Image (cartoon, rainbow, N blue to C red; front, side, top):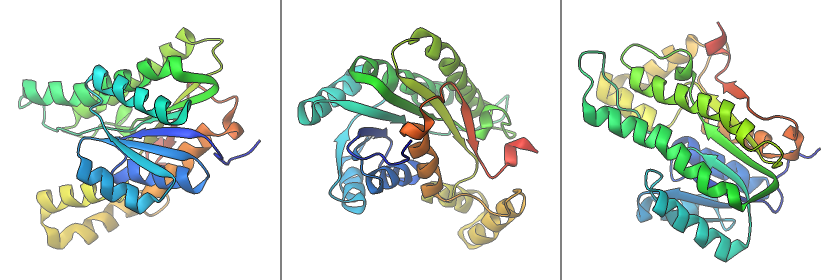
Length: 253
């Protein structure tokens, strides 16, 4: 079985930055035609330039099912098929119990849970036997840090979705899995650390985070890309319904 994605048509939501961009780069390098979605055209243009000629971008909002349906219609018109979907788009709105607002709840579950549903459901009729869906979860699904109950709860909901969905689509030949990263060295992580602790301590903070991991470091976005590529490849042909923790072992100790 091959790990390559030669000729596959793949959609990655939230693909203009961070983990999504790392996944898109890996898919393109492994031979896929990659369509990334995000909310802003300028961010998509930068990402497509970085990924290269095997990529294109579509402005789409995962919380709006009509927007996602339109994106898939555009992809089918251009390529005539769909082989792989990576539901990566997500946000984090964090607050401890007692300080959680209705807006934080609505936004977090809207993007991280409803957005996954609205990414996957309209894609199913387009995927053929052998098609794949990878949903980006988080170690917070089982180990939510203090103040991250909304984020952890939404990611746990996604894990429950997949347990049921693989039964709903039994016999379709489509596989659905969850890939749950731990800490990943992205611009958004660095920005969050800078806001929380000051820009001068970002490198030190990342070093401390890594030292607490069994591997002694945090992950790079392309490492999430390689794991997503595996789950989307023929090498994982009998893998469905799993939550694969790609976290250096952090959630296991």
